[in-house]
Amino acid sequence: MAVFSAFTTTCPWVATTLRRRSFQVATSIYSLNLRSYTPYYPFFSLRPPATATHSAAGICHLAQAVRGEVDGLVKGVVDRSVVEDVKRVLELATRAASRREVLHTNFLTPPTSKESLLVLQKLADIKAVAQGGYPEAERCRISVGHPEALTNDPDVVAALSVTGNFGFQPCSHGDFLGAILGTGIAREKVGDIILQGEKGAQVIIVPELADFVVSTLDKVGNVSVSCTRIPLLAIEYEPPRTKTFKTVETSLRVDAVASAGYKISRSKLANLISSKDVRVNWTTITKSNTTLKAGDIVSVSGLGRLKIGEINTTRKGKFAVELIRYL
Image (cartoon, rainbow, N blue to C red):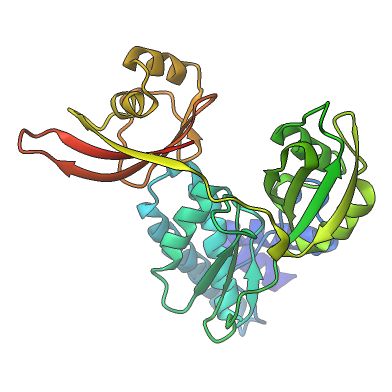
């Protein structure tokens, strides 16, 4: 107890972390996570100290050094709304690499996956693999570990087929998601949901909860359904149809570029932004002067998606923008 008091007094942050670890171990870190529990991944280990004073300073130094490294890496994250999520991925990766083991995130949103992978590429001793179950998957899990430990793609996603008579009662993506979450599963345990019209839908999920959903899910909306597990190769995915064209604009503001992409007036797009119906890279925007760049995905409720392709500057100082409209 004297040793514990010595280094927790010297470094309150470590004390808080230790209390958090003790509580979470006591409440079972490896539970199925049917609700909103998110496991905490400590990224340093405590060893028996030689002396209380020396250990306290050493632990604080180590914790602050790792925190400083993570904070430095996330400074380059473009989408600031996902910084905390990216930090958690980096902490998980640090732990995996130091222990020569492979760990996996839950399903991440597209912005978090994108930013995390960009940051992880900068770390020499960490390999990362993203999997969503099929090409172009939006929600993905990232497996991280030392290159010597992560030698192949881990089996971290499973697929389910949810079938029923949806001919007279069509169900939306939200209907399927709501039914699945209604069984008690946390959102981060569910990946993409691929609608199949009258047949139903295919759902990507973490493998450890697949059997639970199969035995529990019996209705979507007012439609009785049957749920079975299927191999990933059985996922019926069609690459999206697109139309590519170009526009020349005086600026790269979202209201200028996106209005040309959706072929609506600039004022109408501004109204949609004010109504919070416009998202850039899956993040809702509230300002019409948001600047776009190559690779950005713009989505407008009711109008679909638009990808920003190559951008070139004309001789007159304007911007020639390639637009890819998803049909």
